[in-house]
Image (tube, rainbow, N blue to C red):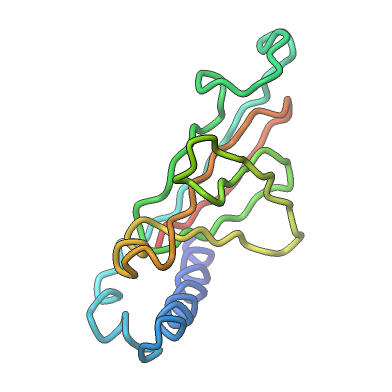
Length: 149
């Protein structure tokens, strides 16, 4: 687990360099301002149990009460997410819209999902918006590993 943590840590730093370059800043900007001095990154293993049809009844829409994880954004700079391929993760591209439109995030074998966090949204003055996302039940057990950077 420690080796996995170190690999994710080393993968996150270049992503922050890319964000800096996209802002026309030096690629070491976040490093130079001390954002990486004492990283408070942590790894969380997530389990979403399978809900049977009996539990869900004939619900055809996703109520907040039955979501695996209700709509939220992550507070840090970026989140790196590894999934087991079971669907359920959805993102909302325009979180300011009154009627939110949710899109399924496809699984790509061997790839990590990168979510922008609230801190990056603030640091970039909303140029990069934090990713509003949720997990909906699919009837299958779901596992993921989220690395909050």
